[in-house]
Image (cartoon, rainbow, N blue to C red; front, side):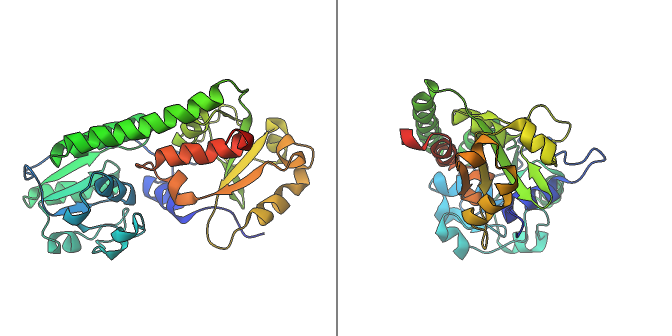
Length: 294
């Protein structure tokens, strides 16, 4: 079977870097660090696809003049100038876009870009988005520096209300154990110190994997059987089908997820990006956990 995974998720992995302990993703970056940004910027460059989504969700799509590769949502973002990848931004392309604000995230590659741009006199703001709480903070901060405070407040209210409704519908139910598969070759899953774990809990489930050293640990057959998941979820990508995922897990026929055919493939971009579609991500996972409720 072709390995299950998704390009966006693994690009984040590579950007975050490897450690001697294995996958130690999402080391905390710098805090918001505004330079000489315009009070109401009219030309904005987004340093990651998640930031592109936030800017568009705040109604700033017309002001966005540069995005990174894989910025495919909303569809209009694909018409914008590409200024490199989020882990390898092209500073010359950024400067050519003539921005009055560049929004970046806090990991090293983005921090270096922001520092260089600040020395050249460009306005920048840097945010960390490694957790749901930080996503909310980032939306507020970006709303502040772009003079879109009201839009940011409305966006957050909508996201949080939608998530609360899903959580409320699931609250009276038992919390099924969810195995969230990142890839199958080798088998690697989302651990508890991840934003994926947060989404699972908001959706009314619990992570089938116990505490682990690595955030996205590789696991073997014994661990799959011992975790006894009720539901298996994987982010989809081109060329991978739910049928192929089910076929992969037929070797574990006695675990509840396989026995009850509770194996699902969901949209990778929606779930693997921490952005303004997080409420949709939570509902997607909830529909896998308790399809009858929806």
